[in-house]
Image 1 (spheres, rainbow, N blue to C red):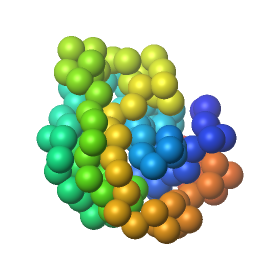
Image 2 (cartoon, helix red, strand yellow):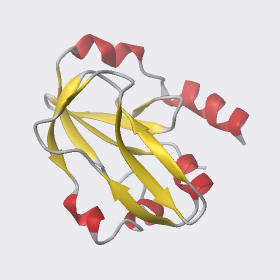
Image 3 (spheres, helix red, strand yellow):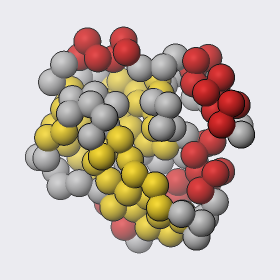
Image 4 (spheres, rainbow, N blue to C red):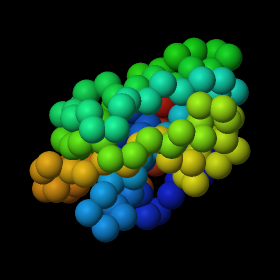
Length: 127
């Protein structure tokens, strides 16, 4: 299992990275391994706003469908439209394949996310 040391995490296996004043999100290597072959991704509309913990989308695989959760309060500023035609990119490069970008409305929530070490313990307990 790979973990991106530059990201922070949710227990539900989403990663988040800061890029300037925007947060970029995707799913972890552990999540894509658990799901197996990703076949479909449902993402929100640009401009939609969500609260921390809200479901913002769904990722479906040959095994299961899994909700995607917001790591922080914010407004969606971009979605990865490439995933409409190539959802399998998540399997081949989970940390290079982002799902959404959002502008956080409460940047202080960043400190509430799991560090890479904390997430590794959660992911290992989940195996």
